[in-house]
Length: 295
Ligand code: GUN
Image 1: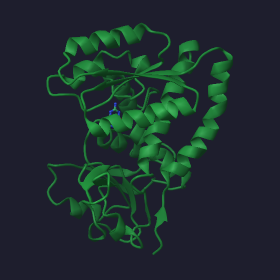
Image 2: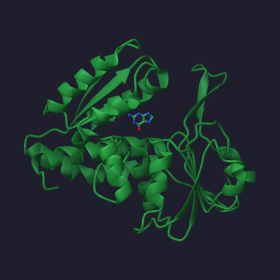
Image 3: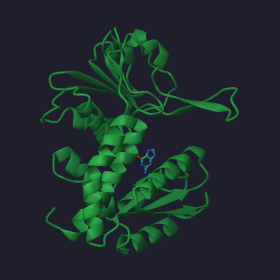
């Protein structure tokens, strides 16, 4: 069977066209949506993600500033920076790039962000809104996955979705979004994780598999039935002989899925561009809410 390639590049480019009037309208009220990014330590992958995010903000004429801290920064220093940013009206969104060094407690840091500026949707207030179906900031990667499915007309109702990975960033929130009683959702969702015996037994019964475990080329064609939709969130670096010394691969064995899966998101160019697009959307939304609290 021919496998459809679900291009996040294509979906994000259509999204950027559609959000432009909202950005222009804010600019005509002298508001430039602004994002503060906190980058701690020297994790190479985090530095690349942050660079890509700020590059897109610049391209769109939005404002962003990256505040860097050394690996040995104290928790209190980060918290006092966040408290300052919470009050700074030039920033509508605040993002702390994860992971953080061991001496820092992620939860305490995230809890110190004003939920109105939590454009990552990681604050317990926004996660509570997500679980209870209220409006709030939805984490960018899961939100982007739903947009890809929507764009390619992949309706999840009455389908079996198997999510592999239970992180707060992707696995848990996407399990909630896919199972919501809502158009294009309404799936029966199974959440597999490191405590699941024989994950393949579940993925073989899936209509849609969402991979967010961070394990290079983990899932092969043998683990899914023909026609399964594969959403691959993994971005793994594996060593190769190129000048860079590595290449990026997903959590799915892409080659084996071609002509077997019904559809698949490539790595790179699949879910990744949508995470950035949804960060733009959440920041624009935060800026809109800053002038109209009834939104
Ligand atoms: N690390 C990996 N993904 C993300 C993300 O979406 N947001 C933040 N802040 N950190 C991450």
